[in-house]
Length: 439
Image (cartoon, rainbow, N blue to C red):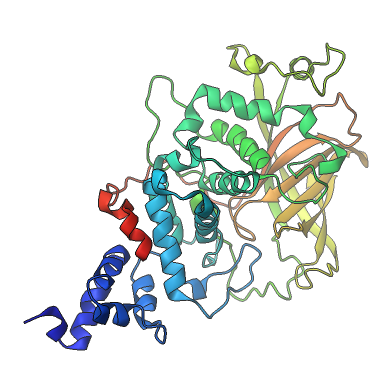
């Protein structure tokens, strides 16, 4: 009996048991199967194929701002993009230059559009995050310098890297020094970018390459490299990694009507880093005549005696009021204050950036006098346990004033122990053949 002589429901079941790449190859065997698989009038096969993958149902997901995603899904197109992204990550050499942008956007969508969890103690980890962490294990694709990236693609990859966490390369001392060199370069903090990790075009959009460097500097204090021990080649789980990036929306909470939609109220741990001000000035060439154009000597960060202080304090935040945001009617600007040891110390606001990210701005000081100014971005979805990472400077923004990175996270978020996800071997090399383009 020929395969096509089987009852239609049996043929369909066989198709649905296949990997999507095998379904594509099957469709190339004859016109009857191609017609069945690519029937434009039916999304049934592709919907079931998508939902049988270890991925989240996109209809249950929300955006990073907590908005519902469209319920109408082009299942075939979505699955094709996901499988093509898998193919390229496993074999970057098969990536066509014109498609890299789409590959990065696909990966980013998988880790930023997720089903929310009901609380910080929930064990409902998104399938998308597990799938992506396994695919990007070791972070080789995120570090691949053979790929020719446009400035936009560099931003996309840096955003994925920031959400992902630490890669194998991140544990190397040279890589850590490079991130410190970026974070502590005073030339990256100007009025044009609000003295924070934003683009220098005045747009107010996030500079993810800057934010990735900040993340790396902070993360290496949380999951430090162990001298003489090989670092994990899989995926390290810690509070600044993918598993912490899901939105936390408790049952009964309606973000469309909630004034404190960002979850500002509560106790936060503010963690920050700084280095010796004299070393900072020397690194930034303040001993020379022109500090903005002279090349910076990054060797200071390679010295065994370089000191970077890592400290923290707890802040009790409370919302004062909200102000309408004409661009985001259900996500108003939130004005808040913060107390340290019962003393009012912090004033700030939370609002949406032009590129749809959650921005935190606050000043801190003593006796009502602001001394420090901080600019940060909530990583992950709204209220996620990942928290806010950014940079601090002085409130006066004098040219020679210090700068440094910070991380703000709610104290109630549980800390997961360091672990590594071990994953199966990559798909067969056939998965990266040019024939895969027919999916």
